[in-house]
Image 1: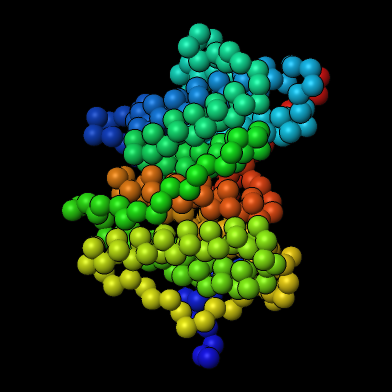
Image 2 (image 1 turned 90 degrees about the vertical axis):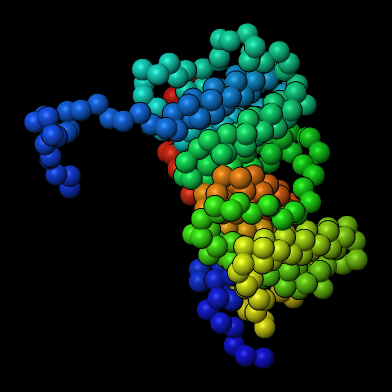
Length: 324
């Protein structure tokens, strides 16, 4: 077998002053009011939804017998979401203070159970996804990442995992920018690698629920691979073929190393799909965001460490917590 190409390594993720100017009216441009941020309305909606979620965590933390350690951990991540989503919003915009309860009766939490909080996490995720097309690419990427974290929180609170959506081929837009094609090819290459990797995973798992899960996830990645191939073909581009072979990031010899490989594959795919949300034209962002969510949940299933921002680096410092 030929040695793996550079594309093979990339698919598996192994390579591991401003100047003053004067305006036409003779005024210093630096003194002019900055242009309104087109993302501000989206950020304000996302922050408001997150404040409602923070209030719900505070309410449940006050209930005797609540799982305090878990709730505090999830609330801390939610506060990080809030800090990232609020970046750039002027203080005079009426944005609530971080973590403060919202005052609108329609958004005030009315239930203090884990099930109700899990439902609110999913509702918050849906509200973020609903704004994907209204956001500029960097914010859309952040919204998709936070929505994936919301889905993971709901699962941690005891809700059944979100059912992965069937991989479908988005209807290509006649004006789809060509700049999305390299990102789509990268997603396809990553899915080729995942399909290969899951073949290795399944071969080293005992014939039990873990192997059944591996088969299910293997089929999901095959379906997503086929969806990207169809889309690229429809766009008039030849889909990137699978490599002749892939070098694994570490030896896989037993069940523990097989599950470690599965977690590695899914975690690498979260980065691919977070980037794809920003690269795709607006009609197709939801497809990439759904893939990001599904990979996040699968990575958690295989024991990958959780992160407040699946697929993206931490975009905001952890809010300072003052001891009481």
